[in-house]
Image (cartoon, rainbow, N blue to C red; front, side, top):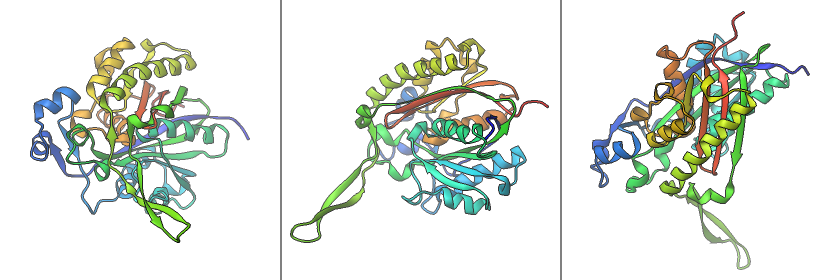
Length: 333
């Protein structure tokens, strides 16, 4: 097999049509627009209806990305769906493959919560670099509203639903310049969505566990401390692997979790605010969708241009975190 590089050839995104502002949430829990916005930077979030499926949102984002990349679904070799909220516990990537008509693609889910897109980007790159596949569709999508406790004001104000996608292609010029991935399971309890078994006796001697998953739980202060410390470090390591410094970054796209976290990370890296892309105010925390959603919006607004160097970093449950440095678009021929 011939080693090759990758290029990101197109992006897409999709969100539900219903937008919920902070005032509406103040009718559910004791909160206010000022309280939420000042602590998080969030003012609106998009929420899926009971009939809306994750696979449908993911498919819409994928179709946009394929259109921009001018790639037919039949040309896709691999579909990676980064999600923690699949329609089916066995995975939803196969449903997306069917809805797209990507008949030649193998498809599977990848679960790394809010780090999912970055982990997926690096995973996709390995299949391309080894020459196994030439066209990979990477989707980050989550419907977090399914798993939020809407009586808990510390978490219900944070999350929104959405999907973002990119098409990665084999390229003679490798545009993934560097990356770093990390995990620390010792801090898993800081942010999780745990299974809660209930004992069920099958016989006098045999008892199994059956149950459901609890809502999202989070220690906000610990997650904040973790993010503002670990995210700048992992970006610096990715930059080191790319043989460049922070001054070489054109755009910084962080997981859209909290505006204060994004501001603190940019400050520690000495990256000016005008280089930081944020759409958190309009969408909230969309988990694995947040980075590709922000990326696609910036591309379609004309902010991000072909050849721009972008640093992305995801962080969240697991705990997991990672960063990658890449150039946008196909190399000019």
